[in-house]
Length: 214
Image 1 (cartoon, rainbow, N blue to C red):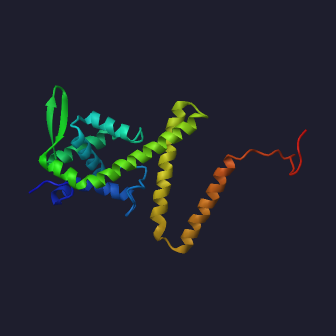
Image 2: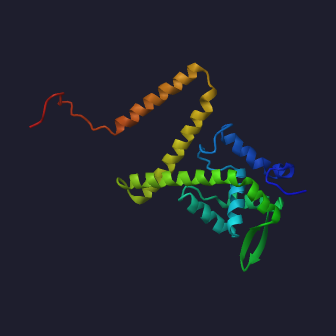
Image 3: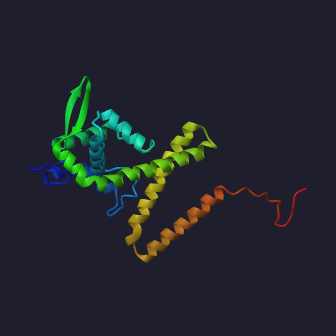
């Protein structure tokens, strides 16, 4: 039987972590609208498959390539990366060899075939990370004008993830009844007003419209 990423055997291999991803990601959530979890297990496995197809590499190098691709937005932890690689090995989509102290991963024939078949889906995942990286870089630059580099980087990351979760929550709420939709709308309007008020200059109580200080 030909190895696949999504065949019956593959489903058993990836099922546990993929189910966790489904719990955190609203059903039907478009690929262009991620939650703060960034990638689920299947998406990470697919991205790794494509990256290995472009150039065989060891685990740390693959993490670095994902981090560079997303401009620092996402770097898979060892606890996510190596289980994903192990699953690809078990499915016969990649193979591993030693070069000195490094374990190098490369595609098998089935892995190359799967890359060709799933490239369009993989490109969506790649572009999603690239868009998130562009947004993160822009936010960092904006924050750097008013705060230290370390604070700006941490705040930009947290703010971008909060924005993604808000978009996901709004998408998840689309099926709610009209009364709850109106509650959501009121909440958004009040929040927008409160945020804009934070950036408004404070007016002196002694100031009155139409007068000028001398």
